[in-house]
Amino acid sequence: MSQESHETPTADKPRVLVLFGGRSSEHEVSCLSARGVLWAIDPDIYDVVSVGITRTGRWTLMPHGVPRTREGTLPAVPEDGETVTLVQTRVGPRLMLLPDDVDAGAADVVDADRGRTVDLGGIDICFPVLHGPYGEDGTIQGLLASVGVPYVGADVAASAIAVDKRQMKHVFAAAGLPQVAHDVVRRADWERDPEGELARIEGLLEYPVFTKPARQGSSIGISRCTDTESLRAGVEDALGYDRVVIIERGLDGVRELECGVVGNDDPVITAPGETIHTGASFYDFDAKYLEPVKLQCPADVPDDVIERCRDYAAQAYDAVGARGLARVDFFYLPDSDEVLVNEINTIPGLTPQSMFPPVWEAQGVAFRVLIDRLLAYAMEASEESARYSP
Ligand SMILES: Nc1ncnc2c1ncn2[C@@H]1O[C@H](COP(=O)(O)OP(=O)(O)O)[C@@H](O)[C@H]1O
Ligand SMILES: [Mg+2]
Image (tube, rainbow, N blue to C red; front, side, top):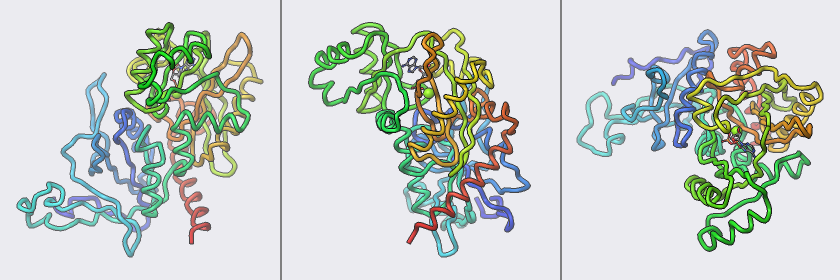
C-alpha cells in the first residue's frame, strides 16, 4: 500500500486518533462504542484516524472505521489490518505504518513500496474508546502519556483504581461513600483452602451473594450465588478472569441508577438514568448488549434520591481522581430508601444500548456536543499536566 492511499491530515484541523477493540473481553463492546464516537466526531472540526487494536494487542489501521456486522452479531477488529504504531518524533507524536518485513517478521517479503516505515501524520489527541483491562485500566493511558499524546478521560492512576473493584471500594470507603457489604477471595488462599474460604465467606455474608472478578466489566465473570456449590462455581469462574474475586451481598428488589459525569476541575453531573431489567435475573452481558433494554432518563425516583446520586457521583469522581468523563452507578433500595455506590467506570459504554449518551440527551446535551466537549477537556487536562512536567 502506498502512502498516497492514506488520508493526508489537513493542517488546520486537530487530528484525533480513535482507538478501539483491544485485548480485553470487552473487545466487541468497545467496537460498538467506537462506532458511536466515530459517527459523532465532527469532520468539519477534526480529522479522524481509526486504529483497531486486535485481541492480541496489535494496533491496525482501520481506514473505514468499525467493520459492519450482521444484525445480532457484534463487531470485532479483524486480524488482517496493517500494523501501525505511535511514536514521539522531533516534530511531535506521529502514527507510523510498519514496513511489511517487520510486520511479517521476515525479511524476504519486502516490496518496493513498503520496505520502509510510512509516516501517517501527526496525532494531536487520542480518544481511547476501550473498556476493561488494557484499555480502561491505565495501561493505554500510560503509553499515551509517555509518548506525549493528550487523551480523553482519566489518567493512569485514576483509571487503574477505578477498574479494580477492590481498590475502588477502598477509595470509596475512605471517602465515606455508602457501599454494599463485601469481601475478597484471593487465588492463592482459594487454592490452598477452598473449603476454609467458603466457610469464611458464609460466616460474613448471607446468600444470595455476587461473585465478581476484581478487574473486568460488562458483567463478564459475574455470578449470582445462592448456596455453597454455586458460590464455589462463582469463585472458580471469576478466578478465570482475575487473581482477586469480590464477593458482595446480593441485593434483591434493587433499582439500578447511573449518573453521567464530564469535566475536569468542575465536573458536570447528570440526573441519574435507570436501567430497567427485562427478564434477566441481573443485568448480565446478554441483557446489556444483545437484548433490548429499557433506559429511563431521568429515572423516576424521588428528588432527594436524585440529589443523593449526584452528590455521591461528584464524591466518587473526585475520590478516584477521575477526569474527562465517567459514569457512576448506584443501587437504590426503595424499601429502605438507601442509595449505595456500586462502581465508577472511567470509559463508560457508548453503545446504542448504553446509559451514558441518553442521560446527557435528557439533560439537553446531544451526543455530538458531548464528544466535542470530551475532546476539549482532554486538551485542557493535557495543558494542565504540562505545567507539572519538568
Ligand atoms: N451486590 C449486588 N446485588 C445485586 N445485583 C448486583 C450486585 N452486584 C452486581 N449486580 C448486578 O450485576 C451487574 C454487573 O455488576 P457490576 O458490579 O456493575 O459489574 P460490571 O463492572 O461488570 O458492570 C449489575 O449491573 C447488577 O445488575
Ligand atoms: Mg456495572
